[in-house]
Image 1 (tube, rainbow, N blue to C red):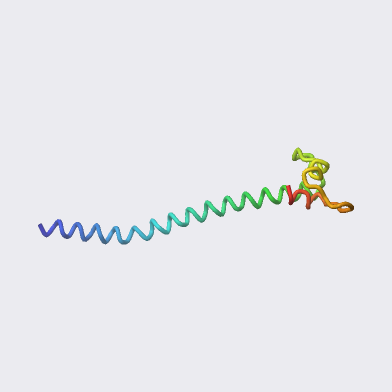
Image 2: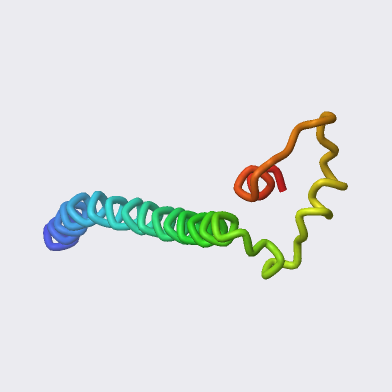
Length: 88
């Protein structure tokens, strides 16, 4: 009978040692996943900003005229390609 109590105490000790490590591993995995997604968003944003800065919005299938039609401006005002991309 004493052997069963010793085993359960050993299992409880091992579980107490492993549980925090598993929680840390799981949270680190979630953080890594979030960072990868954020890095992809930043890369896409940089690519779009480069396209807007180069003035080649047509490569995205969007024309300046189409953007002006979708977002009417006040009379006499104009937007640059970068500003148009920001509001689209």
